[in-house]
Length: 358
Image (tube, rainbow, N blue to C red):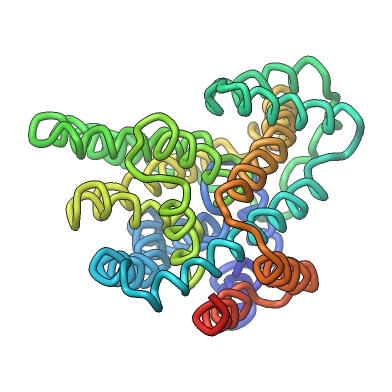
């Protein structure tokens, strides 16, 4: 997705030069949230300011939200039909393969030495023993500052520096978000709980959309008990059918918790902090890139997410009833993902096989 956004914004429409776009990708990877939608919003910010950023953010996420809303509605009404049960019995196995592949891909980029591996194992162990992943992430940031040494990042190249955005516009955005949370607290405590949870998840999801899955699993399944592991895995499977980031699973969670209002609330909340941080980050990008303290903390956080994703892989694997067929389907799906076959093809072919085999 990021490569395609670059093709559209740099080569086809010439909204940005290549250096500016590369710096936008670096910024999106340095702050929490799904990277692709952050990059899209960055293009809007650089092209048309905050309104442009909002337009691209909504434009990128709306199709996935609408499709996920329809799929969530259908899931509630048809979830007990025999063919639907068979469908998700196979898709849950594929979800294990998807998360395992994410763990491998994340680990390949984040684990650069034995200290990273130790931190990842410690994070997985802490999560397994019941420590909140939010505390695990904060601890990993602290250890990252102490353990790692990061080379000073060079200043952005050429004319790719970020123009400062008006402080008034940033304050208006922050005030609007705060007012929305206060409104939910007054009107509906359950929606307030849902919104604050998704806000917190997005705020800690460094490294892309998959980083939100361990946080969401722990809070939605283990702490609040809004659904069981299998239902949550079904939500992830449905999310992979949509054209958006994996955090669109929040729409599914919100719909199951509080219907349409829950779906809207959860979706807005899961994208709000990362957008605000992107807006603020465009002003302080130079300092962010050259801050050794921030880069060391980020290094530790990304290493910890490898351990958290490993925990999720094992937890999801325990939730699946394994037999020869499920093992073969999981192995085939994982092999296809490792060969870089598009995840949508893997899910769609897996869905067809699930109906036939299970």
